[in-house]
Image (cartoon, rainbow, N blue to C red; front, side):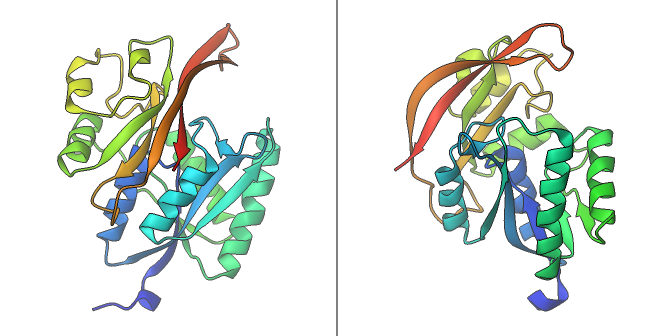
Length: 236
């Protein structure tokens, strides 16, 4: 049997949500990988996960329950791509000095994003892992529930039919009711989740629900605004 020293010392890019939880489950089952750090991008102005809106202290609770240390990548309120790349590279160089050789991601689609991640890591001599790349998202979502994972909708696109699910639990009923233009894993930005229980967690992560809040953001296409509905989740 391999010892941890023979495995790839790996960082997992973590959001606290469904896809990164599935990725961690796969990595924990991989005899060649040792996940020894979670890396989370945090808006330093709000102290929340970028875009997901999940509080930093809840991510810390997940880390504590999982028994995997977390490193927070503290970003300015509105970072440029140059800012992000600089802050990320500085952090990854430090992690490489600590012996990390690989960084893993819960990406499923978006070839351009994969190439970007691979290029950034290659520049500092590290490798990328994509444990759920190009898997069927309907099957992934169904298996996530069947395996006993539990997640709550932390952020949903208010412009889509999923807006009423903010603060609700990710369920088979949701999967049965969503229209065809909504990806079951939210891969087009339809929603983001916070995972509070499941096979990778020795015990549930305690939380409580707060207010439901709508926030506006400029559309990436520059043709107006997008509205996202957030359920404010708090640590208990």
